Length: 134
Image (cartoon, rainbow, N blue to C red; front, top):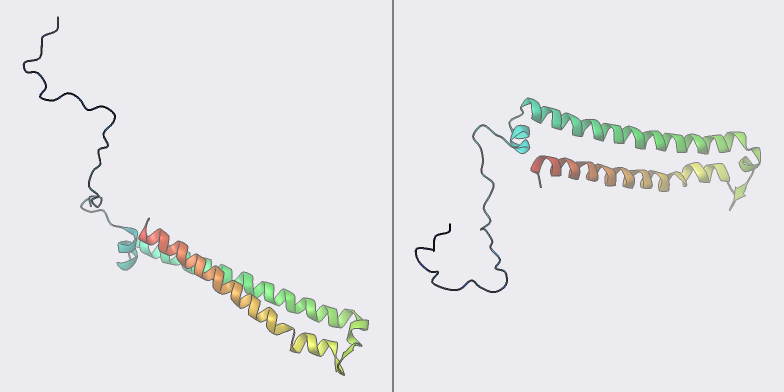
């Protein structure tokens, strides 16, 4: 048994769909809840873990780049020490090993430095994204 409505609608329903939006407001902050950036700033246990994590990742990166650089230098040294034909080459009257170790190392240093700076900036960017949030 349906009852007729007590009053008829004042206007007919609109044809099609109507989009309803809500105003953008910041998310409510609950008391006692802190953000990661507050944890880091206050040097709490969580903040210390976050900073230690960044320091460890930067140290690991430094060790990897330094190890790669040392491996490349050892490879140059092995080429000079174990390939006697290479030791006898002259380029513009200068022995090839001197040119390799005296001039050829600088592009290696530059490329290692460039890779390190690029990767360190990426680590710090990820850390900032984690601390500051989306």
